[in-house]
Image (cartoon, rainbow, N blue to C red; front, side, top):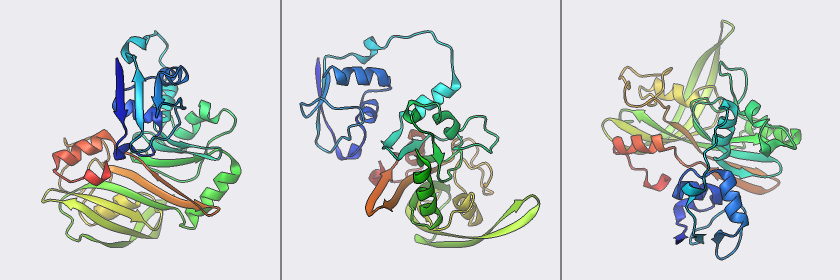
Amino acid sequence: MIKNYIVDSTYDNMRLDRWLRNKIGNIPQSLIEKFLRSGKIKINKKKVKSSFKVKTNDKIVIFNLNFKENIIQKKKRFNPSNEIIKSNEDLVIDDNENFIVLNKSAGISVQGGTKSKKNLVDIFSKSKIFQDSKPYSVHRLDKDTSGVFIMAKNRETAQLLTSLFRLRKVHKTYLAICNGEVETDSGEWIDDLIRYDNGKKIVEKAKTIFKVLDKNSSSSLLEMKPITGRKHQLRKQLFNIGHSIYGDKKYRSSISTKGINKELMLHSYQIRFMINKKKYTYKALLPDYFKRLLKVKRLNFSSLK
């Protein structure tokens, strides 16, 4: 049986292996590579690599394959590190000679120094992606926040990207589903956020540009662009105005969100920056649990699929 597909705009510029998993299911990477090499999967009548970026209206043909029959279940010792590597490698948005871009899963820290036993930097140091290099973390993303995350492959790129973040030349866009109806449709939040370091009180200025994408009497979907980069900035600012993010156990408004979901509904949706006059823009698809809550709360997200 031959199956024909035409790529729609939802998947424009997505890696072929990710497109296959979105359309067909959780196919092992080894099988994808095998079928691409043998020409049993072709795009526009040509053999391509798994990293090929599909475009709108590309024609994908899959020849006489039953993926389920080709998957051999082997008994093997469970290794949590390998499972985390695999689950996050499947979410690679871009992989080039200087850095990788991930759609980070929620629930895993990006680097050491937290209570988590596992973190992306340590785990990816054992990944085939970094077999000739080592991962460098160049920015922060909370453990429970999903979405775009960058790791450099060499010290020079790490220093460059770190500088761009420090100079606020990296532009980030987050999405959040929060509790209650946010009255003001757009504007700026400027706050003095308080944190403590070894018992010492520290006050930091925080600024975020926000826009309400949709809302009703129970919930709101927000787009947020932080200008500063304070710890837990967006979570604290929404808590301060009485509209905490669903799933936030640390900064929670008086209205209980218990029982609605376990995941933090905060997603790093887009990141933009420029290196040597070349513009880079990356978007991370919304997690399924995020989309499910949007439907439950009757919030429109058609433009964000």
